[in-house]
Image 1: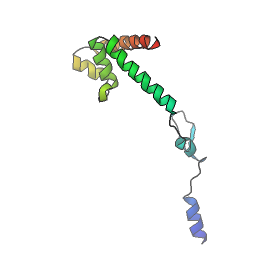
Image 2: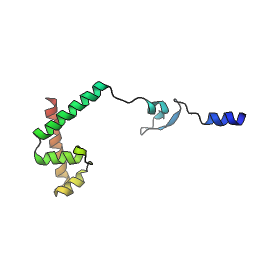
Image 3: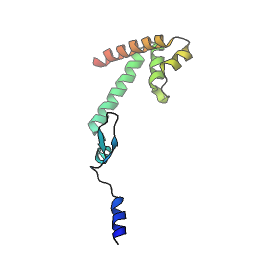
Image 4: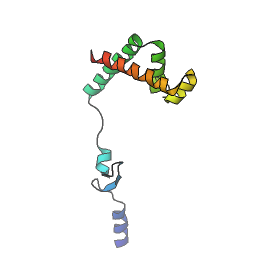
Length: 115
């Protein structure tokens, strides 16, 4: 009987028990992992409006090349995101030029989103 009860206890897990460490070497508990991370309905709706506004601004504000680089870089339209090197090879330009175009496009979008 004692053997069964100790075997049963050894399989129990407590929420406050440390299960590992994160990248900053902080102890992580099971409770932290299992916490409800769902967003409120207001946050979800707000995010959807912001995404729609961003998509409109991408179409309105950016030039064709800027739009293409942003879409490729961030995987918009259901595509897999690409690195600056991959985009540079596709377009036959340097990686640093892709970076400059990307930075300029993001700046334009940030300015428009603040309006």
